[in-house]
Structures are given as C-alpha cells and as structure tokens.
Length: 299
Image 1 (cartoon, rainbow, N blue to C red):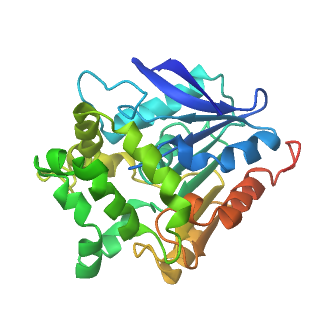
Image 2 (tube, rainbow, N blue to C red):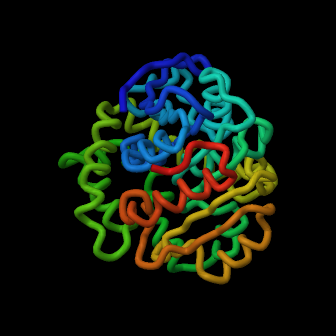
C-alpha cells in the first residue's frame, strides 16, 4: 500500500491505500497500532472490488498532531466521516475498526448511517458490555493501562527502553501462542509514536475519553456518542481470550444486532485478531463484506 496525505477535519492525515475503483472501505486502527495491522485485509478487500483507505489516526506518525491536542471520540468520529466525504464515498461504503478504531466505527455508523452500508468491529463491544463487568476485579486488573495512562508519569515511562511498556502491553493482551505474528505490528506502533508529543497525544485517548470527573456518569461524552447500536448489517469479532466478552455476551449481542449481522467469539485469540489469527479473520471479514454479490468476488 502507498502512503498519501489528505486534509481531513483541518488536519493533514496520512493514509495507506489499495485499489483504485469501487466502493470505499475505510479501515481504522487502534492503540498501540497503525494501519499496518490491516496489511493482510487490505489486499483481500481490494481484490474483492473495494477502494481501501487505511488512515494513520490523528497524532500517529506521519499524521499531524492537532494543535489543540483534541483526541476525543467525537473528533475521531468526525475524522472518520470526513474521510468518507474526502474520498468520494457513497452509500455502498463500508467501515472496519479495531480497538480505538472500533470505538470510532461504532460512533461513525451511529452518527451517519447513510454513509456506511456495512460495519465491522473487532474487540471493542458496545459500551454496555463493559458495564456488565465493570465491577469484576479481574477485568479491572486486566485493564490496568486505562488507569496508568491517567498519570503524567506515563508520558515518561512508556517510551523507556524502546517502548518496553508497549511490548509488555501487547504480550498482556494477545492470546496463547501468537507472539511471533504480532512483532511487525508492535514495531510499526512504536514508530508511529516517535516523539514525546505523539506519546502524550496517544495517551490522551484515555485521559480525554475516560475523564475521572465524568466517566460512567450521564455527563460522560463518550457514552453519549456510543449510545445505541448500528442499524446497518454489522459483523462483530472478539477474541475468546479477551475477557470483556464471553459466549453468553456474544450470543446476546448477536440477537440484538440488525438483520444480516453476526457476532463471533474466536477461540484462542486475544485482543488483536487481525494480527493473531489472520487466516481466520480476514476471510470472515471479506465474506461478510461481499455477501450481497455486488462486487467482483473475493480473490
């Protein structure tokens, strides 16, 4: 894929692209990742007839860091829908997101359902499923980075020893036996946080979106942005070793998503399905996005 820059929502944002014609497929990465995580999915979708655009999130190199430092979910959702506008997307466009890109995907699909015909989210379920386990001590411990990142100290600790903390975070969240597969993704994520300014901006994803004063209250902005489920056909994929969801939760979500949707638990997979189990995940996504037969078919 080639790297290009586009003016989006007042920022110069970089993106990788593949395929020159067809409906837009917008692929949104999370933390601590880059569009590199879609390196196996993008060519599959391009071969199926999609025009793939995979942006580097605002503040992740080589994208611009916003002068106001805004990393809130409403701005990320605006970025996603602005990509649709800038890339000439139409009602056949699809959106795929993982981690923070997944939160953004839920929000973009809710904010502008006319832009996105199908929705794919990986490993960040609708917020109510987090709430169901919100008092589980084991899950609180598993999510300890949410709390550590609130500290100013984290800006200095995270980059030490070539981002050893991020290496540990990847290891903390992958499933069993997936270590070697994720090495390229880990290295790409470190490169995207190549300056103190970018490190702070990335950690601000957690500080600005989970503020101590309002997190979990009716005044919590992120909660309002994600209040609802998409009306479009949606595929939700979740690693079976990512404890936020279990089989009962997946079954419940599957029953609540609109017609044509599915929710799948992936055994032996942790928080990074595209990196850990590409041979299973990529075909699932490609099949879901080409089920209507309107594209050329999956290569």
